[in-house]
Image (cartoon, rainbow, N blue to C red):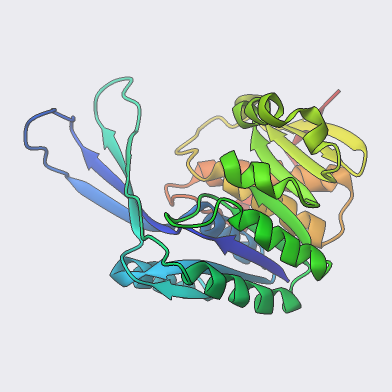
Amino acid sequence: MILTVCPNPAIDTFAYLPKIKLGKSNRIVRIQEFPGGKGIHVALAIKELEGEVELVGVWAGSAGEWIKSSCADFGLKVSGLDVKGNSRKCFTFITDEENSDHTEILEPGPKLAQDDFQSFKAHFKRSLAKANIVCISGSWPLGSPKDACQQLVRLANEQHVKVFLDCTGVQLENALKEKVFGLHLNESEYQETIKTLGAEALEDVVCLALTKGKEGLDLRYRQEFISAKLTLDDVISTVGSGDCLTAGLCYAIAKEMKIQDVAKFGVACGAANCLREDLGMLYKSDVGRLLEQVEFKN
């Protein structure tokens, strides 16, 4: 079973409007809402691939209840900690203006009380008993200790559960003090990590996935190296593609696939997310078709 951890879930909100006029009233013409947060995207993708998965998160208020309910509607097993406050909303504003970039406004989410993290950690430890891989993704709520991710990694290592990370900043810096099986970084995150910690900090990571946008995936897995990419003619949205790629990697590793198939699942899952308007989600049928289109580079 793959245990996915989403410390700071969100309601991802796409808001469509003709243009954004600063200092004036702006009328939204259409809204779409999706359960969000990197760990949730990972869990939903693994579930769609028919992998065994459980989602653990920190949930707050009516927004947290909506996110949990939406995930359960997809058939996900959901657990974790309920705290005071309200889970965040992440708004992406989309306009009709030519060459307009998506504009994001992100709420902070709840603040953990002093004992909240210890309760979450205890729940995580109990959930580990059923897992052979744990994937920890995304940011942490306000009030979380700076070594929150590191503490979870240490617990997983004590129970001999492989840990796959997709996080950055101080949480990643501290987590890398422990044994980390897998890590997904984009190119800028990778450069920042080796600038801060040195390349030696990543030497013991068994599965290191470096994504480079249209250039695809560079994967080091058990001392083997491979590069893979997939070119799409039409892209609807890339939001959540990195998370779906992480899901594909974890799914393939859980199935004990060889490096070529691990790379294929990662790239195909990341690409499948781009084909639908559903934010941060993929369809198994798309993945199956795209697997045969993955190209390997020398």
